[in-house]
Image 1 (cartoon, one colour):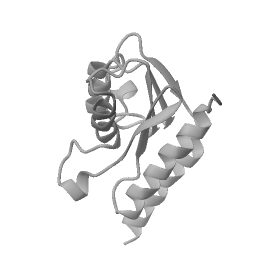
Image 2 (cartoon, rainbow, N blue to C red; image 1 turned 45 degrees about the vertical axis):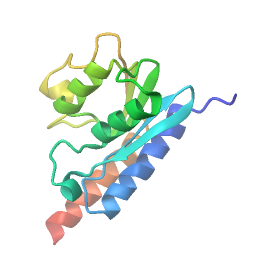
Image 3 (cartoon, one colour; image 1 turned 120 degrees about the horizontal axis):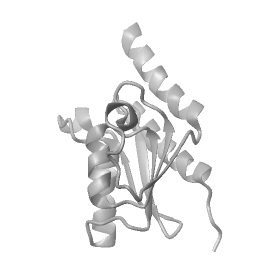
Image 4 (cartoon, rainbow, N blue to C red; image 1 turned 90 degrees about the horizontal axis):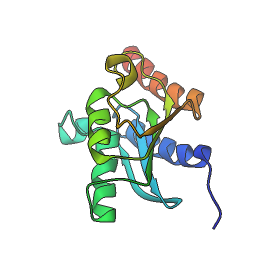
Length: 148
């Protein structure tokens, strides 16, 4: 079986972020991978669902749990374009996800700034994968909002 790279899966998360951008949602995208296969996809739906908890990660966690038939995401990896917030990090902790890979850091709301140590102690964290592309889509979104 061919193994895909972190960069490959982050590109898939960026496709989800683009869907959010096109839907006038904050452009964050996520995919969850098990056994080198995407088992869940998600992007922000907070505006569409009028739900502050409808972050990309939360959508992907729910979808992945349904896909595997259980609430624990052991041996799974989340790829997300923006560093998870404290809420999402808490949910990822409870899911016992094995690895979290994020593109751009979030200096204002990212879990590492707000409350380091929110993820499960055994969770592997990788940051900076396609950081520029992940950062640019968010910057572009908010620049367009300000310019309106």
